[in-house]
Image 1 (spheres, rainbow, N blue to C red):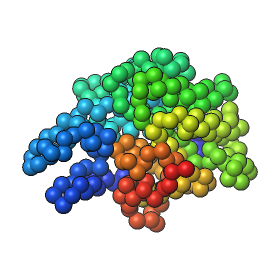
Image 2: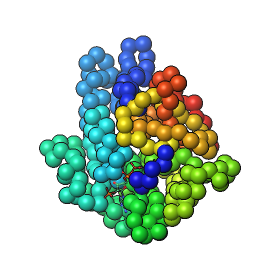
Image 3: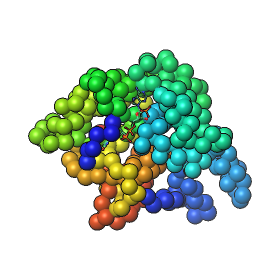
Image 4: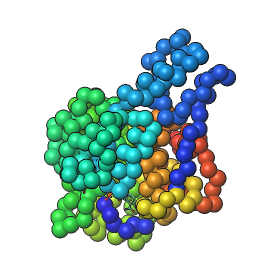
Length: 290
Ligand SMILES: NC(=O)c1ccc[n+]([C@@H]2O[C@H](COP(=O)([O-])OP(=O)(O)OC[C@H]3O[C@@H](n4cnc5c(N)ncnc54)[C@H](OP(=O)(O)O)[C@@H]3O)[C@@H](O)[C@H]2O)c1
């Protein structure tokens, strides 16, 4: 969705294991748990961690979108392997470098059903990030098809492939009616065209009931500009205004993948120059599960 609705500091904070070791926050805790701690001594730990990171593959739906491409780029920069789900392979080839062995482009239209998506996700993806959004056009049902049913198809595809980690880029105000924001002009505008926010809320509800470990990220208005403030993270149904750089939204999605504090949570994010920079484990840790 490119409707005019409405920052980036590298986050290499560390996770302390004990007084001898610190690991990058990008490390997948599930992967970590299957490593043999008994062998984690001296330089061996570094080799094992790098090995684990290099096999981690993430499927990104909507990878040619303005936020999706940033998520792909940041995942690659952090050492993940990426399967970029795109509608148009030629378009994707103009966006992404063809010589990165960690990047695979696969055709994936979320409206084509869960079987095709499961095929695209394959048996090697361990997490799915959904950054899709309908493209405005004549079809008033597009938001419902893409932002509701499309996301539901993706969740079903995860079930078929036993993928148990799902990150969704949603939006603030999806639950605007319950927040008393029915007359908020943004809520009205986005729902007048195809009930976009309602469609997203329906998809969120489906994910939350699916049993899959989810992080639902609801950003404020998206900007292509680089970050000009720090991330503000609030619980669901809290924020009704504000904006954030797509770079930061991508960063939040990538960090969520590695942080246990992000599991089974809905977070709302904007950015502000008036708040201090906080590490992501702190931000996610401050939001409770519901
Ligand atoms: N714009 C805002 O201010 C704002 C605010 C809050 C939340 N959001 C939400 O944040 C998310 C990302 O927004 P964005 O503006 O970065 O997105 P965007 O640039 O509009 O990109 C949307 C992506 O979805 C893909 N897509 C559309 N229909 C699809 C389908 N049937 N199957 C598979 N992929 C499909 C598009 O593919 P193609 O490249 O092939 O078209 C594109 O990659 C969206 O969910 C949006 O609703 C937006």
